Image 1 (cartoon, rainbow, N blue to C red):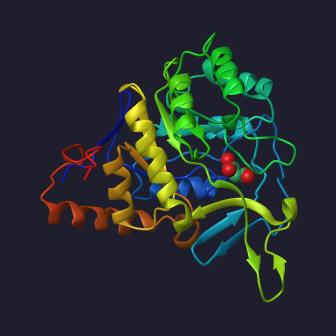
Image 2: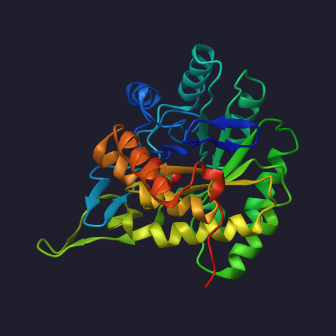
Length: 311
Ligand code: SIN
């Protein structure tokens, strides 16, 4: 069965990968992803310098998913660039995604300049959607700021790049954001980051469950699948065909992956459920996806990708 997926000129054996932030901060975790059945992996969103992130508890599994306010804990940009360079040297036929999330536009420009002048051959992800840094609004909800940073980036940046978007909830916003993204030579957009600033409450203790931001955090898992699918579909149908869509949100099994692919995703990321099960999840989900494809008589993902039917 052919599970090949593509972003730009890059080809992956299958569409599965981790969501940035999950199982990808430490070298040991990235090593496990490398050895897993995932088609590729993305590194933790990096800031120029190492960050401790928000105080704990900052990630909690809840009945239908997770709530987190990690606050971008990471080992610093150089660590993830070095890791990616070593990976491509050891595996010349493979590439990974390198995610960055500066605290301000200048941070992002500084990291992108370093990537541009490095030997990195993979794909860069510019995260415009972290909801968890106190005092830092999500750039992806500010249309002007998004257009401005992309204009600044493409004054010099020559390498493959995509952006990670927050979820949108209104057709006007899908239209406006897609029109902005279509102005740039992006390789992909990633839909969606967590649904920002939800509040999960423990009724027994009458308390919030995470410490940062008085309990407000990004919601992931089954809660967000319909929102993720809507964003994948909305951008797949609005973006120029050379901009691929990566689907992320609510993926627990092969059926969820199938749905993201049907909406038009090229790659599908797993976050909350990867945190729960570990990298062996990719074996299970891949075999579930293949079972569904076999039942439906599909030999390749291209047979059904994007072909969601209307009624
Ligand atoms: C975090 O580190 O707070 C999560 C990253 C993100 O949501 O972009």
